[in-house]
Length: 246
Image (cartoon, rainbow, N blue to C red; front, top):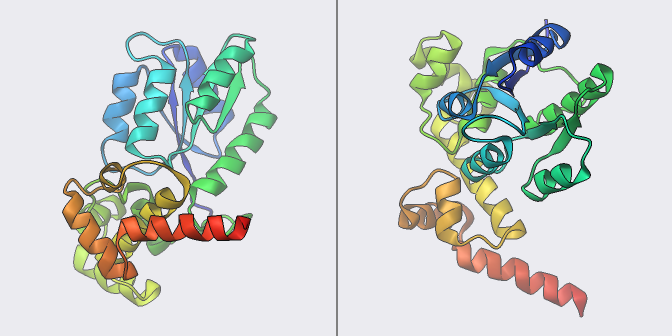
């Protein structure tokens, strides 16, 4: 049986939350009634592949929550939901790095297509078009991909999977060819390389985004893995792009 993807629905209207839970039962739906409740879920190790946020909520509104989620983890997939037929709200959400938007009332089949597309992207390398099998190692890999930039240990993964951590360590390395810590560290460096290519964020900010609170530790690890410093890596990308334009 395929492993169900987890979607977090954040809406202060109970009836809307219930619609998602009942109409989208092929996914594992979890819900939050406000932004603070959503953050308490997302700040812990989790398997949330997609977040759907209502724009108008008490306390932290949807656009504010969107910015917080994207700052904490730029690779998170987030959909903004609005009851207004206003393109201004959708444009503002997309400018704030929302991955898509839904206007109420919505077409369930169309929303399912959107969810499937974004969840494939959130797999970070899982085979597109093929359901993720109910396999402990594949789930362990997915958990690491979605929590690589926050404290998340082999013991945390073993608790989520109800496995002995020594057993998980052994079969993880056997099936992936890498130890749990190495796999997690390589994800951090891979994500950092992508940000160095695609953003103008400072190296300190990138270090923070991939889970290093000490930039020096990040720079040492980056050089150890890639053979170059983050600054030289970014300069090399920039120099190559300029050469191609000549």
